[in-house]
Image (cartoon, rainbow, N blue to C red; front, side, top):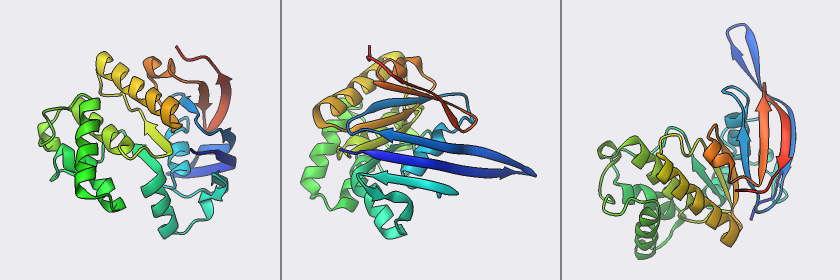
Length: 230
């Protein structure tokens, strides 16, 4: 399980002569086992916040702690180890390895973790079935639709049941049935295994599952609402 504390996070990007405030003094506490959504227009800071918490980019200033450990102070090795063993990522761009099959893509992280071959094969096949890709295990990304590639990416992110999942528009390429199935799977992992979810989304279907809904604009949190998921 993951408890996250973000204190006064700032991140600026340059765009020509202009300075874009991607995060503008963001402070937020995320309790263990949270199921939360970040909403807001493009450029509001949702993806930047996920990337900072996941240690994918460096802050200009501020502090991030996960379970009491300062993520912003970790060196490259410990940070990579944290991501490998405790954080699952779902990116908009999928980031699948083109030469590997769906099953091999899902197994890849477990292989790096040192999971035995028989165990990782079973886990990969089970999770691909869960996300509706049974029978497509041996297809490479180029042989899958965008929605199917997204489901492989989701399967890879959650197969090891990390304590924190950071998802950026996970339903963007899914039809309604697939999106609902995916969100039910996320909810099951959250309720039964205490996995913390942070999901950046524009999708109202996803927001309905949130126990907490945070709205961002211009790098700031403008609304933070506890709610009963539907």
